[in-house]
View (tube, rainbow, N blue to C red):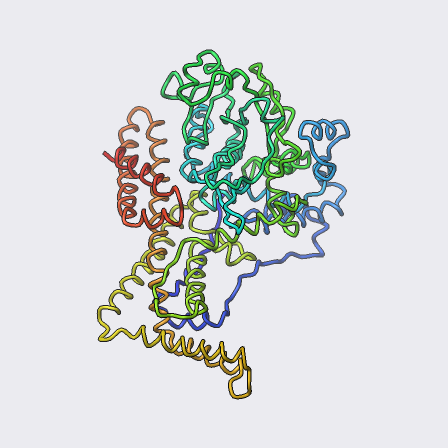
Length: 613
C-alpha cells in the first residue's frame, strides 16, 4: 500500500544564525497528530473498515495505539462486526505450558481487546513489512533466495557489536532488544541479529526457529556480564529456516550461512548431521549438531488468538503478517522429525516472547519487569542520544557549563537531523535511516543530500572564517565567558544584593544572545564533520541497498532481459562504490563512535567495487 511520506524541515543550525536564538533560549515547536471523525456517525460505521483505512501515511506505534483504541471502542458498541477471537480454555493452557508464561502474561494473551503492547507489536510488523517489500524478492522465489536476502540485509543493517553500558561499577553487556530498536541503533549482538532475522522471516511468510541443544531451554538465564568483551549471544548456534522437510542454516553470530553442497543455498540440518566435517567448517561440533533441537519463540502479542482476526483484516489490503499460529507453525517445523519446543525460560525477561514487554516502559504498554532490567529503555535512549562523540578544543575555558551548552545544542542539531523520533516523541517522523530500511530511497536521498551539503558547507565556513580572520577572537570570547561564570560562582557563595545570582544569570544570557555569530562558528566546528560523515554513510548505505535489489533482479532475469538487468545492476553498484569511496575519509572517525562500522563498511565497499566491474 502506498504511503504519503511527509516532508520535514531539516533545520540545521549552520550558518542560519537567527535560529541560534531559539536554540539558546530552549524554545522549540512540536508537531501534533491530527484527530477528527464524526462522533455521531461512529456507531453506524464498520469499526474494522475505519481501522483498516487508518493505515495511510507514516504510521508509528502511537498511531497504531490510537487505531486500536478506536477499534476497541467501536467493537464494544457494535453487535454485527467480527469479534476478535479469544483463546479457548484448552488453547490457553497449551500456550501457557509451551511458553511457560506467568499468570499475567497468560492473562494478556487470553484477552480479546487489543492492548498498548499490541500497538508496538503492530508497528514493528509494519516496519518489517516495508523492509520485506523492499528486498526485491518475489512470492515465486525459492526459500533460499527469500531467506538469503533477509539474512544478508539483517547482517548489513546490524553491525556485530554488543551493546555495552559503562557504570561506576564497570562495563556491562545489555540484554537483547526488540528488532526495530536494534535496527534504529544499527548494531547488536548475534542474538539480536537472530531476533531481527526471525521477525523479518515472518513478514516473508517463512517458518524460522532458533537451533541449539537441550541446555538452551534448561540452563539458560540471561544475565548482564561485567566483562567488557562478553557477547550476550544466547545458547544457540544457528537460525533455521524451513525448506521442504529440512532446515536451511544461518549464523547471525558470524554473519555467514553454513556452507552447503551447492552455491545456491546454505547447508541443511540433515546435511550437517550426516557429515560432521561440514559442521566443523562452521565452528560447530559434531556433538552440538547431533543434539540439535528447534526452538520456536515469537512476541507475546503475535501468538495471541485475537491477532488472528486482525491479521485477516489487514493482510489482504495493508499487507504484512501479524499472527503466529503456534501449534501449526510448530507442526510444520517438526515435519522432518525434529524436536520442536517453545523457548521462553522463566527467568529470562528478554526472550522474543517477552522482549518487547520487558523493554518498554509501562506507560507505553510494557509489562512489569524485574527491577534489575526496568531501566533498559532509559539506558537505550541515553545511548542513542550520546552518539556520536563530539569534541571542541577550548583549552583556556575554565567552566564546563560553557562547552556543555555548545555541545548540547550541537548534539540537538544532529539528533534532529538523524534521529527525529528521539527529539519529537509525540510526532510521526521517519528518520533518514528508517526511510532507507523501509525502501523509501528517493525520499531519504533528497533529505540526506540537503543535510550533507549543509554540514559540509558548515565545515568550509568555519575553515574560511579562521583563515580570513585578522586576529582570532576566540581567546577574548573565552575570557569573557570565564569572567561571567566566575561572577556566577561568587554570587552563589555570597548572593548579596551587590552580586545576586539572578542578575549574573541575566548577564550570561545576554552574553549568549550577543555572541551568536561566534557561537555559531563554534557549533559548525562541533557538528559539521560528524554531520557530514553520517549523511555520507547513510547515502552510501542507501545506494548499496538499491544495488543489492538490482543484483537480485539481475540474477532472476532470463532471456533477452538478462543483459539489460545486468547492466542496470552494474550501474547501481558503480553508484554505491562511488559513495563508499566518498565515505573513506570519514570511516575511522565514525568507527570511534560506532564500533564495528568501519569493518562492515569496508566489506560493503569491496563488494560494490567488485560487482561494478
